[in-house]
Image 1: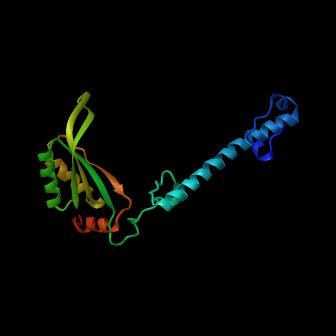
Image 2 (image 1 turned 180 degrees about the vertical axis):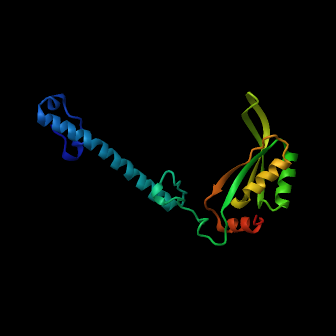
Image 3 (image 1 turned 120 degrees about the vertical axis):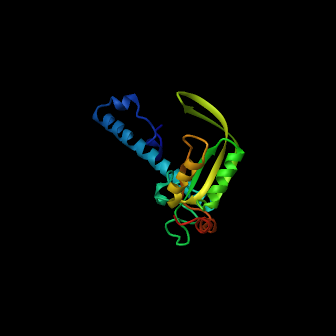
Length: 191
């Protein structure tokens, strides 16, 4: 018994149909073209439903997963459109212990190079150094500051850190609580 029309797309051609000359070959060609198209439509339909559900529930959406939302995705405050904020970043710096972390954090805040530094204890770093794998207990500083202060912050860390090559890496803040982003601007120096 033949399948109803909507399901024929997913039904592979029989061996007899494929060997039935030009008509069977044409059916096999149509099947080969329709199945990927149907799969793509199904994939995009699921993506659209997921986006609609996420938008309704307030979940954040990654611009990498949903490029049609724009370069920045959805956020409560966009850096480029908010005149009361400035482009901001989060900077990670590792330190060998709590005392070093407190000392460096206080000097960063005193110099107004950042609005806030979180000290996260109890991390374990595994890394390649001097030709072998090393492992050390460390603490992580999570620093919130202006993007324009990255160079000055990096130089400050290099001048005041115990390590020969201290970790200083930054990630952009693409949005968030606009009052918090304003606070970062107001709590840091301009350059």
